[in-house]
Amino acid sequence: MAPGLSVVKLGGSLVADAPRLRDLLRALAGGAEGPAVIVPGGGGLAEAVRAAQGALGFGDTLAHRLALDAMGGMARILQALEPRLTVTTDPAAILARGGVPVWDPARLAAGHPAIPETWDVTSDSLALWLAADLGAARCLLVKSADAGDLLDAAFSEFAARFSGAIVLRGPGGDRVWRAADASALLADA
Image 1: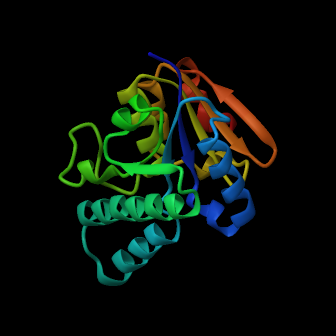
Image 2: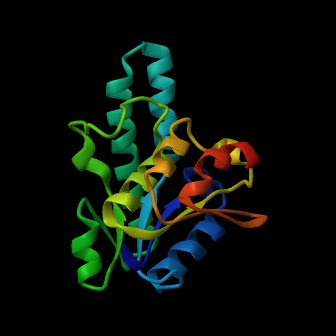
């Protein structure tokens, strides 16, 4: 496990609270959470993909891959808001140089055997997948609301594969779980 490494997922809904989002980005770039990799939610860009799929009826695989593109677009937006951040498909390389990476999941665009290409998997589960892949000590999900039902359908499955702490941070504060709590995560959230 990478000691002290956090994967910090910033919910796409935080765009509606620009001052809070800017403060979070400034704090992360300044090391407030220690070494960290930022995972952007898809926000309005991913919602546009959902709307287009609903209107046009294309399949989940394409929708999933377009939602990955939306996350990449949000990564670039976050970097524009806080230039000390670096957008990358290889967060370990940026961490090794002492930087704060914002993950662009473009490498997953061709598919990955451990990641179902459906709306059951959103940036929440992808943050857990990345945290496990990097051996992070913690996965922090920053949300605009406290309700656990904002987590995607595959979240508990991905949580069961992650050995570190899972923290849901909403306006009401932090809620912390460990891998052993994964089944209860959604039930009590």
